[in-house]
Image (cartoon, rainbow, N blue to C red; front, top):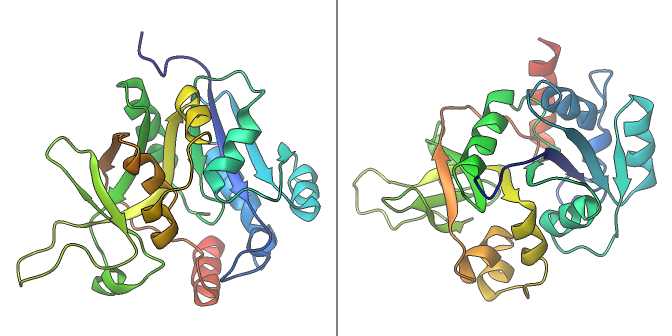
Length: 242
C-alpha cells in the first residue's frame, strides 16, 4: 500500500487580506464569487472525498456557506497557506491532501487528478509545472519558476529568473500553485521552523526543500489563468463569462 493510500480531501486556502488584491476571494464580477468558481471546478474531480475552504475571515466563510460549500475557520496568524491547510485537516480523516489555490477559477480537474496520482506513487509532497507560454513570465516576481533534476524532483523554486541564461534555452518551468501532500507529511511540515530561503523568496515550499524533503514535479501542458494582480481581474472575468 502506498503511503498516500486512503481518503483524499481538497483544501482551498482563502485569505481576505491579499497583499496585491485585498478581498480577492469575494470578487464577483461574473455573478459568482471567485472562490465559488474555484470550488465548482474542484467539485468536478472524481475520487475526492471532501472539499473544504480554509479561511480566516467570516465574510469568506459566509460566502462559501451561501453557495452550499463547506468552509472551516482557521487562525489568522498562519504565516503560509500550507500552515492554514494543516490546521484545517487536523481533525479530518484523510491520507492525502490537495492544496488548490483560491485564485485559479479555471483550474482543470485533470490537474488535480494528476497530483493525486503522484501521491499514489509514494511522493510525500508533489506539485505541477508548465513550459513558459509568455517569455515575460520569466522575469515577473509573482510568476514562480522551478528547476528540476533528472528524477523529476524540484531543485529550487524562485521568484527571480533561474537559471542564469547564456543564450541557451532555459530548462526552467513555470510553477503552478497546486500542491499535494500526505497528511502525515503535512503535520510534520508545520513543526519545522521557517527557513532562510523560504523567508527570502516568500515561498513556503522552500521550507520543505531546505529540510531535505523531495518534492515531485510533474510537467503538464496548461495555460494557467490565475488572479494575482488587479490587471488579471478583467482578463479572467472575460474567460469565465465565455
